[in-house]
Image (tube, rainbow, N blue to C red; front, side, top):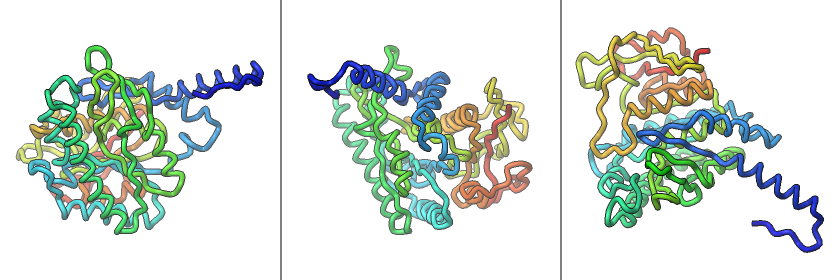
Amino acid sequence: DERLGPGMKSSRFVVAFAASVATATAILLLRLVGNRSKIDGSVRKALKGAGRSTGSSRGHLQKDVVIVKLGGAAITNKNKYETVDEKSMQAAVELLARHHKNGIKMVIVHGAGSFGHFHAKKYKISQGVSAHAQSVHGASLCRRSVKLLNQKLLTKLTNAGVPAMTVSPFPSTVTCSDANGRGFSIEEEGSLAAVEKVLSAGYVPLVHGDVILDSTLGHTILSGDTIIEAICSRLHPKRAVFITDVRGVFSRPPSDPKAKLIQTVRIERESGRMRFNPDLGEAIRTETAEHDVTGGIQAKLASAARIVRAEGTTILIGNVTSKTTSDAIGGTATVEGDASSEGNDMNVGGTWLIAEK
């Protein structure tokens, strides 16, 4: 805390006090429900206000940036411990490098895949220190694993000419879980705010899901999807792209012969109601890996929908090899009537999430 010298006038104390209050109101608060990735609507409004109250370009003049999520399934073999999918990761790196060279500003957030999830599951890290006798040691192993993946991806990006800089949530982002363990708020936003500074300095922020300190539980997990929601609440981007290992969101697991690719999901911003094209006539059925502690595709769809509803951001969920994915990152994709989504060609199409009034 700043201390006033004995010769300071009381008016300066008032100014300092007001400044501290303004700073406190700008702290990023996340409210997670169920899979710990839901941002409370009132918090999101507070974030918008905080981003615009500084009088600077930060927070509301970053709409030219694209947020790219590299899902764990897109860059690792999720079923084989600490195994990179070299071909898919290299394709993702080449895709991002190409768009960087074309002048596209981006923030990259990556999942953990087979790096981290196994430890998180075994030591029940999302449930806090008391959930497992070796939870603290497990959290260290989990974070070591995630950082190993981050280093592999960072190396490939920098070798490809992308000036990526890792921004890690631990230890600067600190949460406070609520009494029933169903959600938490951010006590110290730390690295989530630093993303803007890194981006403004000309770098490409590379953020990852992480183990974080929690004042109630001791520690917990902050997923990449939750991080993207927080970043979008600050930067208000026009578009975001979620890259996964399949073409998009399907009505059933993609391996099911009856699975249909959902081409568009229209989301009413006021009510949150979703309209699917094609109309499914049934609930979406998905599969989640046993060791996945962040909710699988259902959680990602829910996270993307909340971003669309809150920010009006247009989002594509697609495969790394899809031309539609590339066009979405570059800002040249045609959202309406994307007939290329039909059929089974992995090199075209995806699932669009679009805001409606």
